[in-house]
Length: 320
Image 1 (cartoon, rainbow, N blue to C red):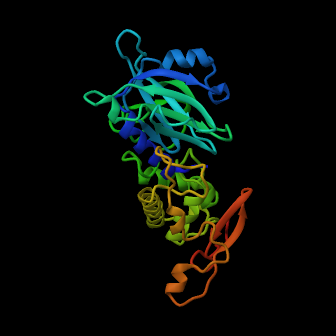
Image 2 (tube, rainbow, N blue to C red):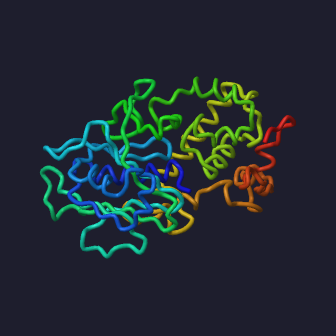
Image 3 (cartoon, one colour):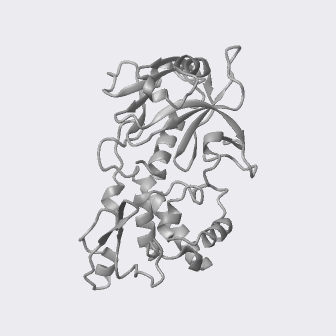
């Protein structure tokens, strides 16, 4: 499942190529990818055809393209095309002469941006999804409860899709509050990793980056949240932000060909992982200090947690 850095890489790629362009044609090759659009395929076409993409915005793992009115065909203000990548969804920018991908589901033909030569830009946005867990739909935007921008974008407005309104802000969001996060974390009375994976508390953190951030902060995944002091919360958030920023610089984490950027390139942050997936490999921090500690894998919520048993000592009052 793509996590925040992977979705942010896609957002940045889309922002470069689609903002300011108009959707000139909509081709739905597999209606299953529109199952979240309850009004059906024809309504989806009607609500996207002729619309101008005014931005690409992300909150946590949620990604949406606000659509603005163009001419008389237009869309009502406050409408957005929402994309859910699921396990294998890809948003690719291609030229119309590029062969269709095997699992191509939805294709949008885009106009040239203002002042650009038609031949200078790829003219198709393609949604590709091998496992069909992802999808696209058009939804209405509503005001954010705090009046701040809905998420990260080029020109984000204080609007958010109703389907994402319950999602907390992520640490890369300028409106994210460390103090609010600390108070809510202390009130959870659960294990630390379980809290990090709670998208209603902090968004965008998945299994990979939770393990990496906890390793960097030297905190055990079962540390009770109500025992964290402010300096520890600050250290944890700094670790989360640093890990995600490094992942962004590397283009995300790709373990197979299912996660790619808008140009089809894979990320390479997997080469820099310190804990996740490194069971029985030396802890690099311990090695630097002359210790020969091996990374351990432990079962967690039907998945796995990777940690160093020395750097991240298990607390006596551990919570699952």
